[in-house]
Length: 292
Length: 292
Image (cartoon, rainbow over all chains, first blue to last red):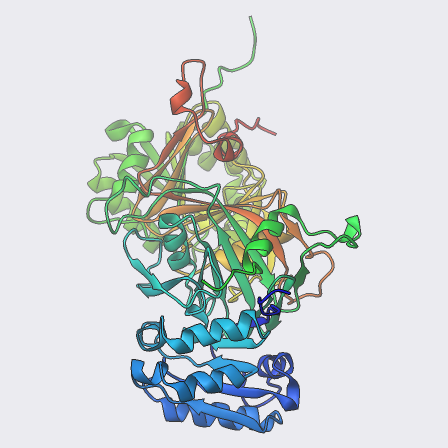
């Protein structure tokens, strides 16, 4: 007999900010469903925000209106909080973990590498819990995280910096409020300088739902834009800071709300196979990365 | 002996609007150089504009400051003007023909298919003249011309319509004020619905200079964005009007000011050959289309 726990990978609900919290609540409804519906145990991490109580109040009400009895606020104001037995225990019991907006640098400074962070990985990768995040909470999900970045009219070398995120996804970088704040040039800057990463831009009231190991879905009002620079040719290494790089052959994919894509299985009919241009991106986004 | 005239293809100077007309005038300087410098004979076509005299005044001053003695205004307010012997004669003598901004539909309604239009093709393709156009005058240069189009946050089926342009370039569509007015979503809409066309977006105070049969160059302050949908996979045929299409594998190229690309010749060293991703785009843009 193995001592390995039975691994059950869960879902990520990666939201581009400003999701509807009062009316149809399509995205939050899906988050709750994935977390177990009325039986869900949801904890809300507000550490990205400077107005944590207001954030909690908003989601308390939304999740309450969606019929979730068991919901609570993890008010984290220090790394001690993020390492406290009490909070780790609550994450260990949660079926849904939701990270609000604010500043992803603040969020990571408080919880990055903490016992809580580790418990979130266990929740996602062993217990099959659902992790949601909106705005800063979305950007924080990837291993390489957009830390600071000006939005310029054109891509501009040196205008963006990355930091270390929570690492639920790898080889991607996530930007939010994407079309609304015209952030493609910023995402192109990141990809130009970091072609190891695929850029994912998520619009407001729009979610990229990732079923680890199986597929993705786009929900809400906008679209998900993916920028892939792996085959790109660029002079970015040779130009000065603040100059605009030449970019040849960046691959751009626009996945509007309503799209869904599944990894092929042995049963997948040939006619329903994914376009090859999308398959390896999907494989990367849905990859079941081990707990490190 | 052949009766064929000796063909000498000229240049297109395709400007994204708001080019500097008072200070360094980099783009207008290049236009004048290509048209023969101080010996140039420049005619200005203001027919796109409702304020033709003001437009002429502005370019009269700019070209005067650049040392061009022989410059004149083709004030076209009717198709009769565009078919008049006098105006055709002046185009026949011009070494530089410049089209101002305004509305490209108005420009085409006045000069499209006229004797003046035919004389411009002869000027470009037989006499090696330079044709410049800014804003509406830029969009008018391609065979398929952006006629009307809302700029939405995301691409939107049915939000853009094309018309017939002057046809100095084919298989492209040109948009201007491109990054400044955030027009990528509009260009993606065009390409999604018309993948026959490559989308060319030109920033303000930026020019795509096309040496027909030989190469291109980007001048000014911004960049030229090229969107190529030939390998794209999309559901645009199946969705409703106003819906956002799925777009998989659009190729995007960003050519900042300072870039230049030459068609390969027998002498081109292997190390200086163009990336194949760009070569056939360059071949298309520089193609010496016959007079039709």
